[in-house]
Image (tube, rainbow, N blue to C red; front, top):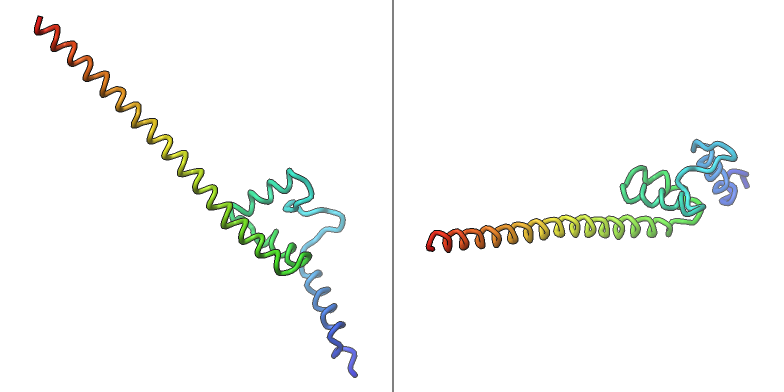
Amino acid sequence: VEPYDHPKLLKELRENVTRLAEPYIVGVVPRANFDNIAFASLTVFQLLTTSDIGDVLFPAMRTAGPFSAAYFVSLIVLGNFMLLNLFLAIIITGFSETKAQVLKEERENQRMIEQDKLRKAQ
């Protein structure tokens, strides 16, 4: 049996080649991680803005397996949905406040017009 035909050896060789192909400084933790609440918040924000998703997704898939991709996809979809709803709620609230202000001004103008008519009638 050839030494390169062994499946376990081939798998280990592929993993080592993949690991070597990535830029990594020994002892330096990447910025995008979930080690503490500050970095986790920053990483989730990075994912929600869809900026450099691969910097977080691929290392997580390598360490936790391919099912971690489901977490990231659901995080992005649900997070962006929540951000969209928040943005729309802010816009709708702004429009309703503006509409209420316009209605208040119209009532005030009508009241002033009625008072002017009463003064002229006297």
